[in-house]
Length: 73
Image 1 (cartoon, one colour):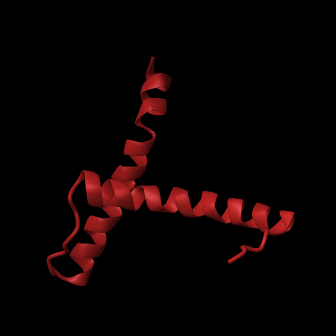
Image 2 (cartoon, helix red, strand yellow; image 1 turned 180 degrees about the vertical axis):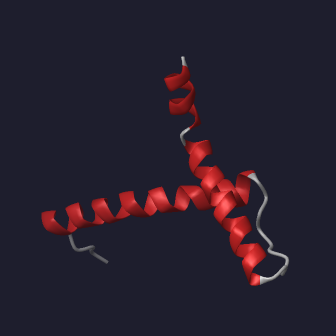
Image 3 (cartoon, one colour; image 1 turned 180 degrees about the horizontal axis):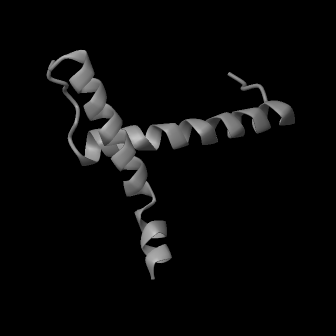
């Protein structure tokens, strides 16, 4: 079974798409694996939405914590 080689254009496209996808998936990893938010209890759509917005905002801060600490020093 032989694999087809990708064209340079397709390789560049795949690389750019995978970079964007990786940035988006890092936030989910932090929320799910690091903080254990894997199962959602139904509390109402508004409360669940607010909690998720808060968790993902905090995950952005968590990802940038080293840069934020360096800015303070």
